[in-house]
Image (cartoon, rainbow, N blue to C red; front, side, top):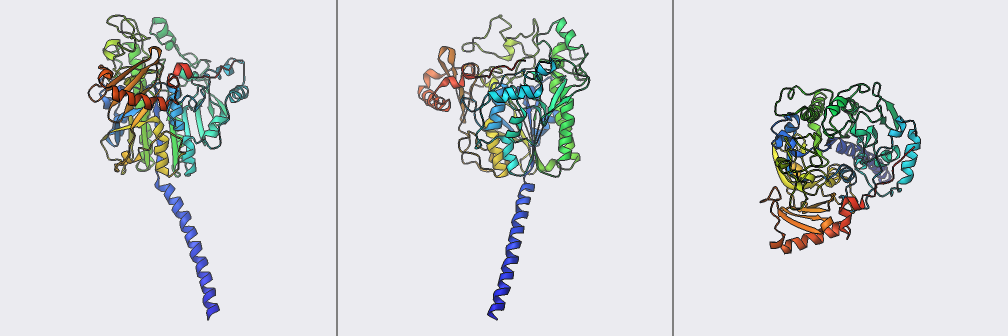
Length: 531
């Protein structure tokens, strides 16, 4: 009897063990299935004031607004002051005031292909030879998702540039990518070729080496050049939309992460046609109508993506996030209207960026793209670094929520890691804002954000204190944003203790050297690739 009981027990144990193992596998599969698909739409130079949800009066953005109405919008979200650092921060989880966390390559490398000077392999080899080897321990955003069983895809203005390679794309963890590897070529919207998983893809009918990039300042000759459509058959953003829809359809059964760094509304201005809403708008000049149409196209494409999710029945299990890399930029410069470099159109004087600063009403911006804040792209005023951030996840994010919590672009990796159960390396700078998204009690949120700029670094705290550094003249300025949204009243002289505390934090975050947060002194952009 004892032997029989023992034998029965062994069989029973084996069966139980097999059941547990199978259960664990199913549990793991289920845990992956229970996490949502994630789509991140990353606008290019979109100041938050361009969204009607944020008060835009001329351009209506109903599809982006709907994301906010059905989800959460952040009042205090921060990007970077400029495109490459913003994208690097997003993809690495480090803030951009370190000075040594990534390398920025020179743009324009792939134009050599159109000019017959170098081929793709030669260009990528030269770029890869310039770059340091990435440690195996380093983690990039798509790897967070891949570890959790997601299919990863990037479509649009790829990585942080200014020129990327297939080796980089694969190392960073992309299963699929399509778009521009060069952030100079992507200033034109009619590329003769793009890249798909390491392969050069010719775009029939697009023949211009500069991808149709036009002159920024509006003149008659600029207008004529812009609307000379010879060699401009296919608009890049329409290609990207097709690829996005195709990616979603192909991966609808599996969890996926799709990152869409759009070109819109980065200039120079280019659009296949002026949107019907602006054709007869007498508030706008011709080039302003075209620029508004670029913002409108971005919103329309968001609508197409959301409709596709709904048609496929996966919108309830897809988290969609919308944000921008940095603050507003002017691409519709015109005599008597608004000029670039920006200046006070009432006096003709340039802003000194200390005592005088950019405001839409002084510079002549009909759109008020920076939402009434001081400064624009490249600056460390709020208008240069504060961005829209919207997230929608039905059943998890309460509709119509507004959050006053601090959030930054370098928090995105930590947030997504929290979502899928990935442990982020401790040396990363990000903090998860997932609890804020889903309405859980937050014991410890972000206490401050730091950012670099073309004039020096800055820091904004969770309770509204803002210290900016103007490096050229070694000037600190302190503002209390809850009472001073426009940064008009420098109160450093009466708040020395707070200022000193923030100076110490800022210096520490800059690795002991504030020049690390002064982009012009430490950009270390690698040498250009020429044939």
